[in-house]
Image (cartoon, rainbow, N blue to C red):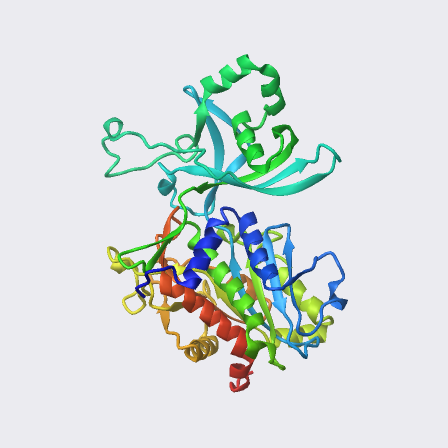
Length: 466
């Protein structure tokens, strides 16, 4: 556990998170890992069923907000089961409003909307910037296209109120998220002086919806004119990068570990599976799949969320017809992976006494009688067998009866009918702007998924259960 250098899996996670300040970027980062490993991009709108071949590796995206990737066994034919890992790639964040232009007391402000259940006070006094997707017009051709943008410098800040002006701040800190949680972009005086200096330039950049300064920053990053920007989908992000930390570099300090941690590990494991000599020689395995969904933090109800048609449609296209689809589902197994709650040393009573996952203690199996997590006995047995095949250790997590459990994409996807289990690496500070994980747990999760893609059908063949 005591690394002088970044261990490979943790290094990969850090690089992934730093390149992915928005869900759009996370999709692009996953796609790059897949393409570098030889995965062929297909499109949902095409008739790709006749083009995929046994032994092939493929992926597609939906609206640049979700990713589906799969590898076919060498002797693949319709009706095969799916060995699927499902994650989500969105995180609690602040989203720039469609009309964000605000000002108060001489400051330029940007209107934002809270997304998900963030620990919002952690966003105060942070060096923030914007990232996301932009629709731009090509000045020469008149065509429109989307571009990803990441303004890679501190641009915004939500300042706290000085303790001298609020003596209760250290005992009962609270704020109004609409009126007292508005990022500052600049000074009104700078906008006014520029208009006086050169009104023509300002008119070219000005918009009824957003401050010209915000549009300029986005345009500069893209290398286009602000006047070419037609639409914005921007989120705020913390400019402090993910890094190793702790006395022996045993931790990962990072934004968006919920749930880019699982997303990276799933993608990395699938990539490694296609280069494995043992995997390439397999004959009777399942179709190995990863599904990286969006909008889990707000309920998964969207075209790119876990309650969309993505999973069911993939099964139906690989195994068309009611009978083949049903047989494929019956042979399938889904691992839903989302980060879990590590026991906090200052708040141990928030955990059930026998279910206290720790950082670097291994992947946790998440169980809940109310089916907020989907794990059950047979699935748990299978995952234990898979972990043991790679020498991994597992932990167990259940919430106390006096605390309401969170949830994952697992319950939504389980309604398709395949056996489902929920697992995840434990972290601290979940939903904070900066979260904390264990370095060893990154490799542990990659190994578990790798064993799943390599050996699930062998384990399932030895298990006599209907």
